[in-house]
Image (cartoon, rainbow, N blue to C red; front, side, top):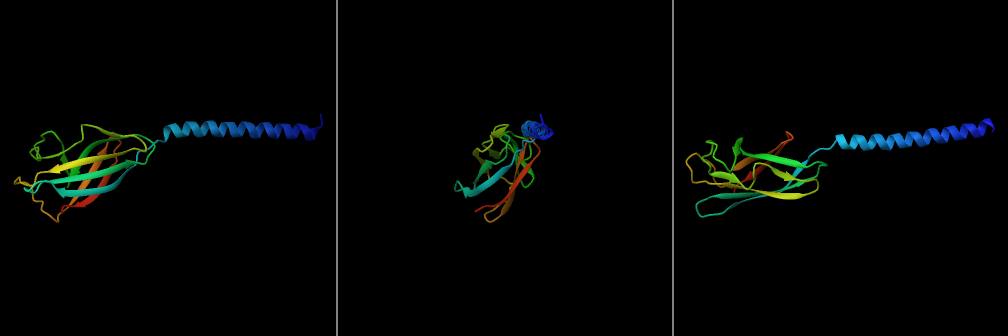
Length: 148
């Protein structure tokens, strides 16, 4: 066997092995680099009753590679929960359960209800509120919404 043929065979084997190792490492890295990214596609704030109660509907899409587990909604840094926490006297709530999961590529809607008749509420039509959705992964997704 000539030295030229031996060199060509060794180079071909080295290239084949390096390509195989690169694909293998890329597969391993992909398993550990999943991330969540929730985009707020649209929001709509409407008055739902003559008493001035608002319903805010937020349409969300998870454009990340991992499931996003949303665990809380905040209005002006006050947590909105469907259970009485003492902060808002259970008059603000959402359609979220304790965890609201959105798989990768999926869309979902969160509805937030604000009772404007309570004395602690200083919100009125034309007011802009800061809505923040918090995930179990520690991410916050923020949107300013004007109440109409």
